[in-house]
Image (cartoon, rainbow, N blue to C red; front, side, top):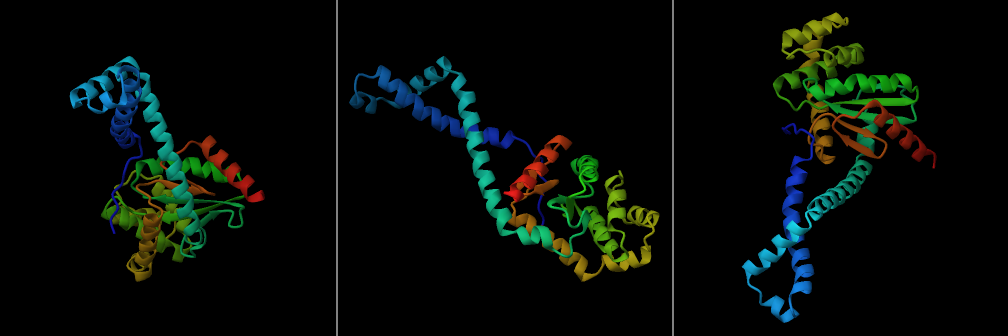
Length: 266
């Protein structure tokens, strides 16, 4: 069940928008220009392909701003469609997101707003986001934080996730999570064990627990949930009814928490 990491960006959207724009402008240009230049619908209907293409080309060259406008509208339309689909998927998987007993919880377990994080210990963007979410949770005593280990960057990511999940049996998940998130290690086994021992974890017991079937089952559940939510990379964050793909700044996260809190009070 391997999901490749995808950098979040607009390159793919731009290319799709450009292709869609070709068809859009073709229809717009033909309709608008033909009505202005052609003497009748019948003659427009008999215009050959080269003539129509020239009309479209001339129209675009005379009105280049329509290219940017059309691409922007296509992006906005896609964003609205994606948001609506995200809402449906979040609603359908709410219990697994918020109430899986195998998912570690930080912050205030009784908090009125929950942040759910999908992350990989080898993900550079996750590491940059980590102190931002830490600050958010420290500054707001009513945030509940749920951790979803989602190792998508190779075998060492899986090894690190197993160690983190297994460390719960020694009551050390949050301590090890913090150390690993702040580490620049490649996360080989010896490095992970050194980090574990630095926070008081029994390494021999940790190794046994990492091999337990229930450890892999938790990772499989997180993978399955990520697939249901159509996640494509780490970090991914859920705050209320909002699914964020990629990192955000502290102000943006605070605004989303405030919005989720206000929505609950309605």
